[in-house]
Image 1 (cartoon, one colour):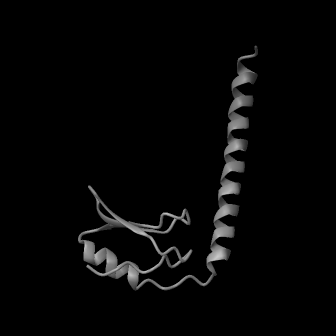
Image 2: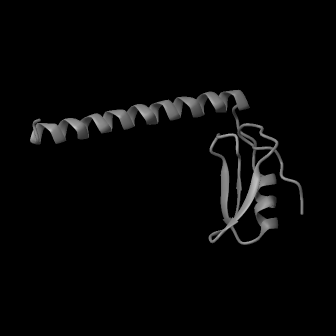
Length: 94
């Protein structure tokens, strides 16, 4: 088995492999969101991961973008929850 190359997005040297009912997957454990899923063989997953093009952004850029994305997603969830809260209490006053 070949060694896994670093994550093409964040540069993490420790992506990991797992096997699930859908097949072989490779996941970066640093939280950048990079993953390859559902390969029939372990070697196919490794070959695909290792030949992937590098990101156009630096690892620092990718971490900043991932954080901004997560902040935006959390903010949108708060807005969604607030609308549900207002809708519920406008129909069911205390």
